[in-house]
Image (cartoon, rainbow, N blue to C red):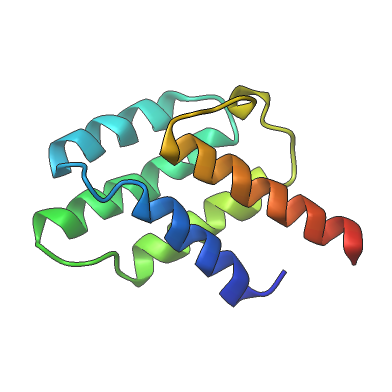
Length: 107
């Protein structure tokens, strides 16, 4: 999967958090940092997004890079916690991981 494709999946994940305040994003980031691997890898990305939001800016390169990196790390192992996820954020992560797994299988 190309970098642009992973970045597009990362954008989809970040878009699910559009309605969240910086404080809500920081709370989510804190929870993610305490989550089991590999979901904890999304904590920094959400924290960077909170900082962007507080400054009134769109997600920057660091936020996108961090999200893409978390996706790549998560793609190497099953994430049973996401099975049946309905929340848009978790569903976007699950969908992205599924796309990445399918891409790996077709290479």
